[in-house]
Length: 139
Image (cartoon, rainbow, N blue to C red; front, side, top):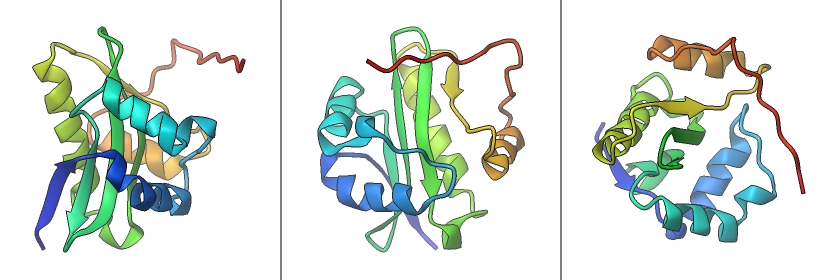
């Protein structure tokens, strides 16, 4: 099986959105419209990726940074393609891009109810932060 990794573009949005909608543990909101994702990709060029098998998107991840820290969002792999290293490869592509622009730390937000997601991140070397609390406000 040959998987191709490409930078995500707004043209990938319909297929990526479909993948996210079908993936457990992915929380979508108004911040995930085509306009919002297009703006995110423009602010973070070359940092988000898709995985393709025979032209079909089988994995995707959003990645960007604020100049200090990197952030990944919505890592998803089609169920039939999981446990083949695609998720880890997508993460590595993102981390390589972050390193190339001088970012040396990256965060991912994982729902506390998403045990499979937490196990994936632990398996590839990420650590759960217990000294921080995420706080948000909608406006």
